Amino acid sequence: MAVKELICITCPRGCHLTVDENLVVKGNFCPRGAVYGKQEVTNPTRIVTSTVRISGAELPLCPVKTAQPIPKGKMGDIMASINKVSLNAPIRIGDVVIANVAGTGVDVVATRNMDKVF
Amino acid sequence: MINKDLVIIGGGSAGMAAAVGAYDHGVKDILIIERSPFLGGILNQCIHNGFGLTEFKEELTGPEFAYRFIEQVKTRRIPYVLESTVTSINRDKLVIYTSAKEGVVEVQAKAIIMATGCYERSAGAIGIPGDRPAGILTAGQAQLFLNEYGYLCGKRIFILGSGDIGLIMARRLTLEGAKVLGVAEIMPWSNGLNRNMVQCLFDFGIPLYLSHTVSKVVGKERVERIEISQVDAHMKAIPGTEQSFNVDSLILSIGLIPNNDLLNSISCTMSRTRGAIVNEHFETDIDGIFSCGNVLHVHDLVDNVVAEAREAGKGVALYLEGKLPREDRIIACLAGDGVGYVVPQKIALDESDDSLLFKFRVKAPSKNVFIEYAFNGEVIKRVFKPVIIPSEMEIESFPKNLLKSNQGTLTVSLKAKEA
Image (cartoon, rainbow over the protein chains, first blue to last red):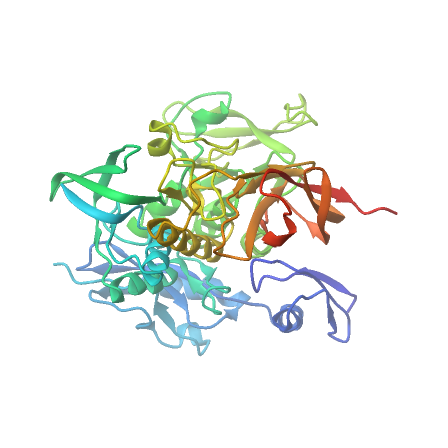
């Protein structure tokens, strides 16, 4: 593997990283960049955020996220699962919406409190 | 009429944090006035993650970040009204708002904080040539429709402007099944954060056309096709470089404009970037009226907005205690070579703090440069920057004791490193 150039996405700072064949990361401002650099060339992961339908709340949608980063290649499967679910208000931040989504071992959780209004 | 020590106009991130900052510095008689049905402002429609790394040391989505501040407001029992629109303010700090529930309400405030955020630059502002069909909307509109109401604005989409909301919408629309054919940016560099380029465009193979703009919109009822062209150094479309895309929607992410109608209506002094001119406590040139957050200047990160807003809240506390200098022994702060703007634009030099934060943006990406602070022509501070880009706001601490006089001009400029 040749030296790979990456832009760290761990935080908005966006450090320019290089990762060599021995997985040595350079250019990172903080330790999280080194973890990201290694991860990105071996098994890239992302947090997926989306919405699911909800009944009984003031809005028709409840925003959700994967509680941990999931493998990048699983994004499509996860979106398909998310689009099949619907909820009933009330929902609190952190409530599990889908457990072990798409076999990743990661839960999809709610990210907004949705009070019951009708 | 009711009386309040502090009225805060806007219940988004800036308004809530300003309320918390003021409260924690002793101002207890506060009213937050919010136009929408929820506290939280634009954060509620920003369902992506990446908020809060500085503020909470963890990565939150917009609604989660908003919730943390809603809780801070509620635990302090700071009163707020929702679905209430401020229709006028005056220089004596009389605020009038209307709501369906209360009708017209007059509030006499001792201080006001403006925390009204921005609105988006729209199609009319840039004069795109061609037809005017349905299907042209701003990135924030598309985001609100999709994330809070569940409407996908189109199936084949082109995005003009590489601002962060545009990049984030490219990903979001793709995940919801739309095809995003590309993003055009008129500048030779992206206006979004690096991380958004990676995880919103590169992850999905969405092409970015730098130094390109939309040169034609075609469509009778609905957008049918757009053309983009490369631009020259003067940002004029170059004939012969047209590329055509069959799309049903054009999304604009072409900038944010501070929502300063109320301050303009009372002739508050404004800067070139359309925010108010403020001192280091965020007081405008109108006695007791303060401004913070995106209505003052556009921030990249909400973490910086809430930090700034808390300072504005503290500024109100100092004002109400009579500790802000009324006499303008003022130092003017100017943007020099290579610097687009500086906040604050004035320094009051009171005794309350030893240092202040300068915030500014550079005009173009640069490497190996010094930020140079010159007071009345004499260089008093230099900071080396290996890399500096316009899409990331610079925040620099500045010790007030470097200013040896309480009159004069401080200029912040960019200087190339001598070879």
